[in-house]
Amino acid sequence: MRRIKHNLGRLPQVRMGHHRMPDAVLGIGLAGAIAVGTLLPVTQAFAGPASHRTDAAAVTTADTQDANRDGGQAASRSEAREPVQQDQQAADQAKQAADQQAAEQAAQQQAAEQAKQAADQQAAEQAAAAAKKTYPNNLDGWIQEARDVLAANGQHVPSAKAMRAAAIAESSGNPNAQNNWDSNAKKGTPSIGLTQVIMPTFKVYALPGHTDIRNPVDNLIASSRYCDARYGNMDNMAAARGYGANWRGY
Image 1 (cartoon, rainbow, N blue to C red):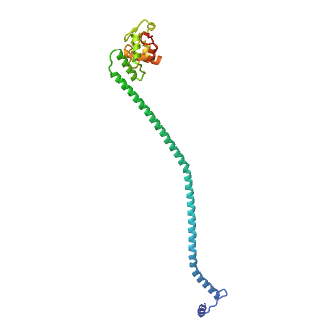
Image 2 (image 1 turned 90 degrees about the vertical axis):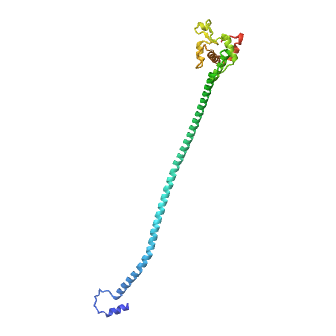
């Protein structure tokens, strides 16, 4: 400052009004300018990192809030999905149980149908075997064939003894015998054939394919089935009528 004053003293003296700035004030202003120029960068250096830290903290806080919000929304969506998933699982299990039950019922029905087909096939085979088999054309042959046909059709098979007793007692073993004098004949339905069966009864108890009342085999078949319905079977009927000489008509 003294140097400045010294230099200023060399300058030509200029008169200044009372409003001109004094030397002390000029020196203070110059010193303030130098101080401001020196301290301003330092102040900015300290203020910069602090401001940066503040901004970073604000960003971190915002990110944390966003993360918490997203996490809460995700948890809410997860909780909302759980009942839906449980209901779907229960529905799937119920459907599986229903499908399994339906499959079991279908399998049972199929097994029943297969069993029926096997039984029908066996009966058809037995009937075919009986048809192919040859029998003597006499009372014993007729009786044997009638018994085979009954068996092939799942009917009760009477003993040969009971059949023979009925045939001998009723017609003496004659398949063409016909009674034209008894009460049935008076009603217009005479007894016909080997076991003396009237036509209405024969038609009810004849088997398909065996509908000739004068055919001894067909006659035996129908009379046997009639005895099954009326007496339990032909053996019961023959025993009740005493067989042979003690036979009473049926």
